[in-house]
Length: 439
Image (tube, rainbow, N blue to C red; front, side):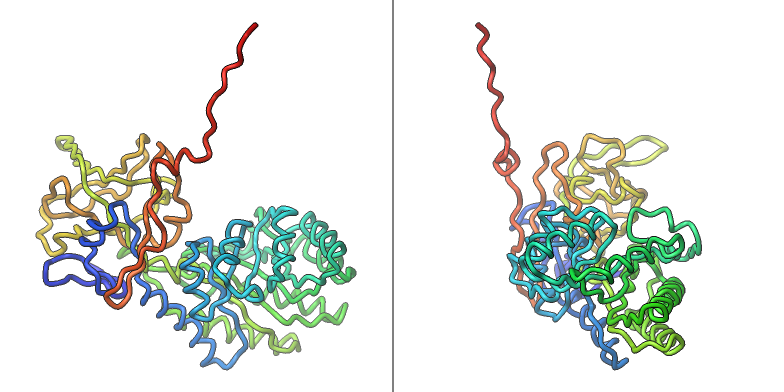
C-alpha cells in the first residue's frame, strides 16, 4: 500500500489526508468528492524552484493549469511564486479572476481565437506561445490595432517524442502543435516574426510528451532546439532570452510507475542547456518548464460511495460507485490505471478481487479492473489515488451527472474550493421548446 504526501491511516482505521479524516469529508460534502493535499502541492512546487535555485540559473516554473484549474488552485500557484500556463480563454479568465500576476501568464494553444488573443493583450500577459501562421497573423493585426508589442515564444516540434521510456527521433512532424524544425516551417515563422514590429521574440518552446520517467528526451530536444537557434544567431544575430522545454514529468499512479526526483529532471535540463549554450556560443537563456501533472496529480484523491454489486460466476465481481467517467474519463479514454483503498477500512484484510464500475450508461465506464479489497457493503467509501490531474479538468455532465465538489486540506483544516453542481445548475442554460401555432 503506497501513500502519497500527507496521506496516512488514522486511529479509526480511516484514510486521512492533510490531517483530515476523508470519511468525515465524504459525509460533510457528499461523494464523489475530490480532495487535494495542499502540502504536497506546495512541496512539489518548492522542489522545482529549489532545484533551479541550487543551479544558480534564471528560470520560471509555470504551472500547466490544464491539469487542474480553479480560482483557488491558481491562487495557490501564485502564493508559491509559480508562473502559469493557460490554453484557453476560460483558463485565462480564471487566472485573471483569481488575481494572478498577468506578467507571469503564458498562453498556449493550437487554435487561439481572435477574442482570446485580444483578452491576452488587454491584460498584458507575459508571453504568448505562438503555434501557427494563422495565429501570427491574428497577433499582428491585434498588436497593430492596440499599438502593443507582443512577447512571443515560437512553439516548435523538434522531432523528439517521449512517452515514458520510448524516444522517437522522427515521426513527430505529424503533430497538430507548433512549427516543425525539419521542414522549414520554423525558419519561415522566425523570419516573419523578426520582420514585424508587432513581436518581441523571446525564444523557443517545445513539448515532447507526458508521464516521462527519464531525461533522455529533454536532452535530445535541447540539442535540436539549440542547433536551430545557433543557425538563427549566425544568420540574423538573434540572441534568445528564453528556452522553454515544456513539462511531462511523470508521477506514480501504480507500482508499475517509477518516477525520478524532481531535481533529476531540473539538473539534467540545466546542465544540457548550459552545455549547448556554451557550444553554440550563446548567452545562457532563462529556462522555463511547465509541470502540471507532477504538481497536482498525486496530490488529488477521489472519494466515492460504493453502491450496487454484480457477481458474474467464474468471471468477475463488479462494484459500482456513484461516479465514473463523468469525473474521471482517463481510464475510458486511454486505459489509465489507478490504485484504491476503502477509505473507511483501510487496513481491512483484502479478501476479494473486484472491478470498479462507474454509474454512467457506457460499458466502457470502468475505473479499475481487478482491485483487491476487503469484503464491501453498500455505503462503504472507496478512495482512488492520484486523480488530481485531468480529473476535474476533464469532468463532464454525461447522463446529466453533476460535477463533484473539491476540497483543499492542509494542517488539519478543510476548505471547500469548488461547490458541487446541482440539478438546477445542469439546466440553467436550457431554454424551453416553443411550439409554433399552425394556422
